[in-house]
Image 1: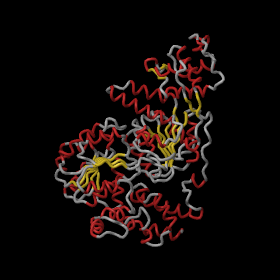
Image 2 (image 1 turned 60 degrees about the horizontal axis):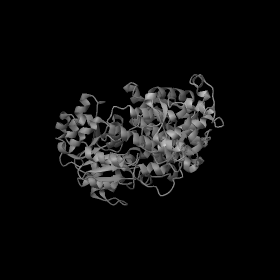
Image 3 (image 1 turned 90 degrees about the vertical axis):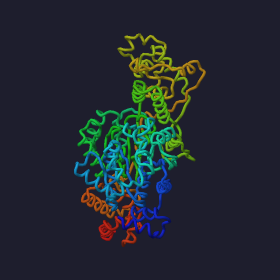
Image 4 (image 1 turned 90 degrees about the horizontal axis):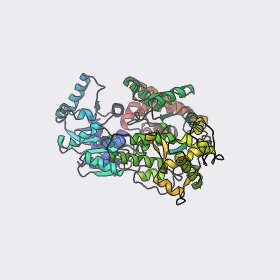
Length: 618
């Protein structure tokens, strides 16, 4: 590795413009930097701090890995996740880079070996958890290591306004004092303007450059539907994705386990993942998801951060996340390879009520609760938007989209919007006349004139509003309740066991002083887009029928090598690299080296075997 780096630094290769470009091409196998990668590298090499925001799959690791190879000494990478450390170090070893991680998964003897390597300057990158870094003993021996850069990954964890705050990150503001003169680079995929400012303050970054790459993930199709029958809706969505890897998010551990069990009865390979599982089971399930093809993980939010699997074709939410930041982070795990992927979500009134109650009953400060309520409002507003979904999603992070995306449910199938003032008045009146004590189900029963023990016992069948909405299906009334809650005309009161209560905003509607616009939810979800048999088998659309045999042979070769080296298949080569091999059919090492994702180290290690497959099958 040192020899390769020296070659890059000594002579600029054809087609590259700097030593950093040479490292990118010769070591990582890529021809050009993306977004703000080169700017971040230049800041690090100049000894200056930076805050780097790049979308998931945007190549954040390159920002600190390239300067690690260019500079003298060791780059220290602070990472909160054991699995992420292990995967990144494995990938670096495949590139011939001297890297290691320190965490609780290692024996004492193994940890001492790594500490010795670091002290002797034999590591270019050392990954460490924040809780380990803040220990005085760790800092003592790290002071003997010539550090060239400190990279703080998942930096949003330091912010109280971020969606994944972690206490251990707070002490990282002392890095400047512990290791004076060492530049720091904070990296995250998800941060609003408020969170960015909080990260800079809490990490005590010195005059940092804020380097923001576009948040847009144009390959991801966003879809949101009202929740009617979660399992049947999920089944319809998953049918065209058989054989594809994906993640299904649920709010509770119990639901996670039951959905995973049900999916297995439907012919899918699915595993649960939640904090209630034994640590060994969680690790085993995550490892299987990363290394196997076509597996579905059904998970709570305990799963996902740091997952570097590029070929996740869908992320489905059966319950609402807590914020747009969380939603963006979770859906960003789909399509990291740049290929088409889907972000699909269903939600209903109960999701809204549950999250409202969680926010209201929190023991946090009033300021924090108010901020969390605002974030939930933003998410709910986004769910009910009638125009392009990508525009408001990007606007939330301060980015403008010039035109509608053409790749979300609202762009592809614009929803009908109508003046719903009369219906809103009927529903608000029913809530008021029943005493603002009852939940949506009972209010809808009153509106539709459904006689039940509760309507009879409470004398509600004698009210003027009883049956006034009988001509409208109950499902549509439930949709109207949800929309009125989202728009702020109603709220669910935890003190009344979720009973619906009018807000001040509702009074204007009842007095004919305001109008209400409603979207028409489809009562029967449209059939999912069909796919070919090739799609279901995991064959990309652009692979010609005559090349399917070569595609399968290259994947089999990759899988065999991955098992031999005990790494995920994508660490050998991404699907995009295999697709280019199928298209170009390189005949020799020079042609193979020209393919994106094939660097010198991987050419030396794997080139002969893949060329043999291409000659045999191409």
